[in-house]
Each structure stands twice: as C-alpha cells, then as structure tokens.
Image (cartoon, rainbow, N blue to C red):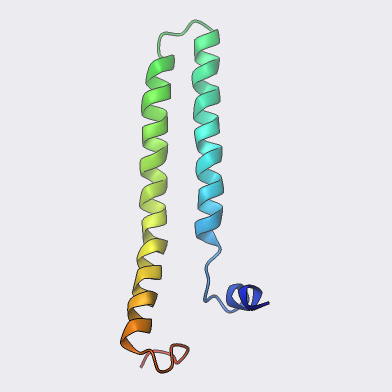
Amino acid sequence: MGALRDFASFKRLLMPYILQVLFWCGIGGTLYGAYWLFTHDNWAWWMALLFGTLVTRLIFESLILRYRSYELLVAIRKQLRPENPDRPAE
C-alpha cells in the first residue's frame, strides 16, 4: 500500500520504468530492422545493428539520467535532514 501511495503522491516516479520498457522496445525494433535488411540482401544491415543499438542506448541514457539525478538528490536531502524526511523544503 505504501508504494501505491508513493506513486499517487509523486514521491516515486513512474517514467523511469516506462523508459526502460521503451528502451527494450527500441532495441527490439533495431534488431528487427537489421534482420529485415539482412534478409533483403541490403549491405547496411550491420550498420543498422551496430549504430542503431548504440544510438538507442545513448538516447535513453540521456533521458533516464534526469530521473537518476533526481533520485540521488532526494537521497542527499534525506541524509542532510534525517529527523523528518517528509517535510517539504523551505
């Protein structure tokens, strides 16, 4: 029940989990595209495989970095004020 309350009060964010699912969908799409190019005798299948996975990873790393930074800032705030971590910042 506490996790649901954290999601409802925006103390725990949902988007990092959605980004992880979208990342794996992007990797799957890249692999499928490279396979499609390979089966249609296109020479660029290896470039799609290599650069497609790399670019997908870089895009999603830059997106997830925002949420990881927020989580670390929350952890730092809890360490600085351990007496009442739920109190809003002044």
